Amino acid sequence: MPQYIAFLRGINVGGHRVKMDRLREIFAELGLKHISTFIASGNVAFSTDSDDRDGLRELMEDYLATQLGYEVPTFIRTPAELAAIISFNPPETVTQKPSVASHYVIFLDTRAPHSLRSALTQLNSEVDHFHFSDTEIHWLIRGKLTESPLFGQPELDRATRGVRTTMRNMNTLRRIASRTDPAEA
Image 1 (cartoon, rainbow, N blue to C red):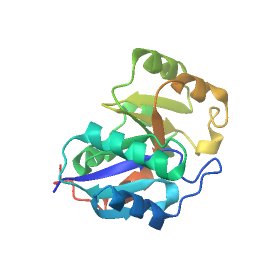
Image 2: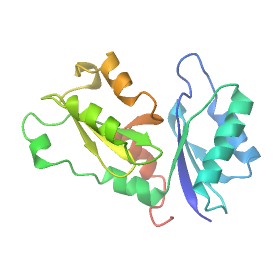
Image 3: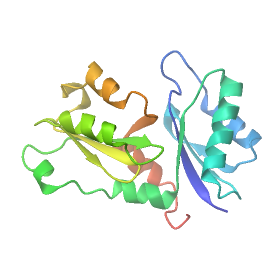
Image 4: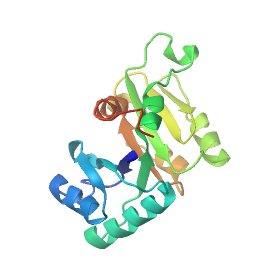
């Protein structure tokens, strides 16, 4: 039975509150199995007989919207894909002193469109660097997130406007990956 991890956007932020036991119930109501959540930010591992990832995503988003009363963009990855994401090795030019202290992954539905790549590339600086992989963007920060000139500023929101995204800290992704089996596709 294939295993997946769903990364949900907007769970327990912006006035929305969902207890993790309720989130597991919602996923169980969809007929999914072996459901587990990790921290209260919308990370859900599950198994299903379906290999139709787009169909699963649409089903989840529709049902979550019905049950919670608001849209919940959902990004699904396999344990093997998550393992590949966390094995990301930044280019040497990015890792030279001072070293990268914070690493965030921005999930997308598809490859980043040219407009997004261009906008984020223009935001590269001595502190922030964006690197594009398959359906993720790695945001490397020399310092803490709150020390980035982009933190709390509209530039990043403007760059991603119109593109469905959700973001996770690399440390969180490593902890989630440690609970899944990358051999499961």
